[in-house]
Amino acid sequence: MTQIKTHTTDLSLTTKGETDIVDITEPVEEAVRSSGVREGQALVFAAGSTVGITAVEYESGVLRDLREAFEKLAPRRGRYHHEDAWHDGNGYAHVRSGLLGQSRVFPVRSGKLVRGTWQQIVLVDFDNRPRRRAVTVQVLGE
Image (cartoon, rainbow, N blue to C red; front, side, top):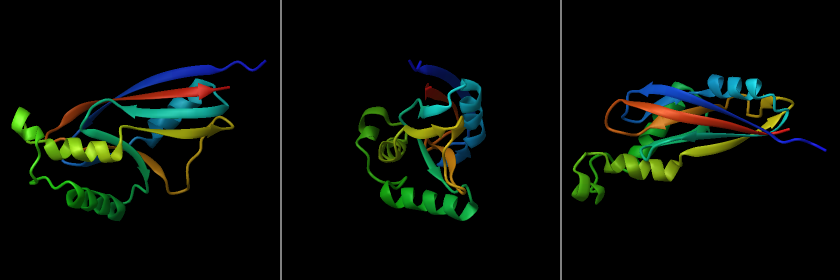
């Protein structure tokens, strides 16, 4: 009988806001290594409604392209109904976060995170100010 294990690691990051893209690959890989899970999945979840998680090549051109794409999709100076209620200037950040999503699941094989050669896991902070961000990495498997 195979026993399923779970291991949860909490990360805390300081971000700059304004579509700050932070490479979190190494701490996620460390969470997988310390979990003892050989075959399974790693969930990476960022708490917050103005933040997102994805995987990209962490290279200056791609980072610039990603920022520019989000500016086209949800421009900072656009009209957002969120502002009618809260007047906090970050309606665009909520929309961008909703488009990207706050979590991703990655496979774990032979005790290692499965990802492409040029693929890093990144947190994207869309808010209009620096923030302290909480990320939960939960590894599940055998």
